[in-house]
Image 1 (cartoon, rainbow, N blue to C red):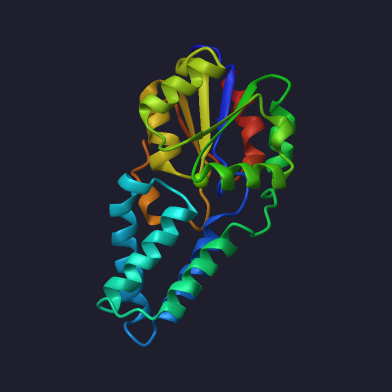
Image 2 (cartoon, rainbow, N blue to C red; image 1 turned 90 degrees about the vertical axis):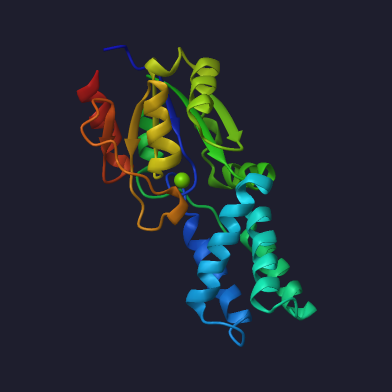
Length: 232
Ligand SMILES: [Mg+2]
């Protein structure tokens, strides 16, 4: 097997908490429209609009905010009070100020791999917001490279591991999304390590490539160093 030289890490809900803040904002949003529809209806409409808008706006808080406004317009039949629009905008901005703290085992895992591998952060979302979170997390110095991308596809991993490493066959991607972090990385020829998180956005689900020789699942990042020892 090709030697592993480069490890890519997902950021949101792999190195730090993210989805829980979106869920809180979504609950706040549903409360604003409680007179018009049930929380379930609002949630499923928001999900639908959010997914449709990804191809126009990409991932991140700005996209999510625009989707909340569009959902409010749909749910109210165009009669959304301007006060509600203001509150949606405020809720979106608030999402950009939530504190960023590394998840348990994140620091020790990065500490354990930094000397023997090149490590790259691979994340999607709003450029400014992802930069802010990285700075606030205090993890910036661990990375040899940072890639803030619009989507995580097979081509993304080809490009990232070519730019920062020795190609995908010498690379590994570690993250909480089967759809974005694991499956396309394996398809590109890299190892894919799934680290599940309790809260993962429904749009990030995919079938685990169970049985694939380059697929591994670990309960938390603390199990990454022993996995690497076994692989090498
Ligand atoms: Mg993630």
